[in-house]
Length: 113
Image (cartoon, rainbow, N blue to C red):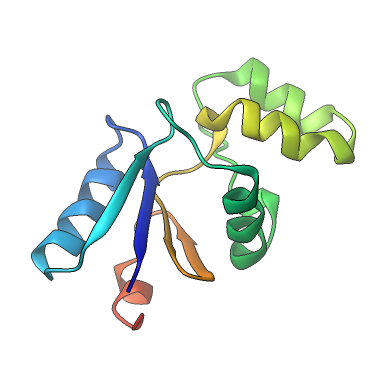
């Protein structure tokens, strides 16, 4: 298993996801979206795995201006704007190869091999 957790250091669910994998002795890599963020390739792979961009957007994001901008700009520009402003993503985003989840999803993770 090659688990990556994309999250924010102050996100409670990101910490819960870390604890979940740590308690089971599963190695994971934590990527802080505020410091490093995800690459375009990672983003596209995760977006495809979770069923599209809407599943990744955090409607409770603190930056309402960026959220509104993403909601109303042209469809072809949305991915680029999200990559520039990854604070609008729901966390944690947990990825294992081609599989990915958004939010705290232990019921799905336990079935990963």
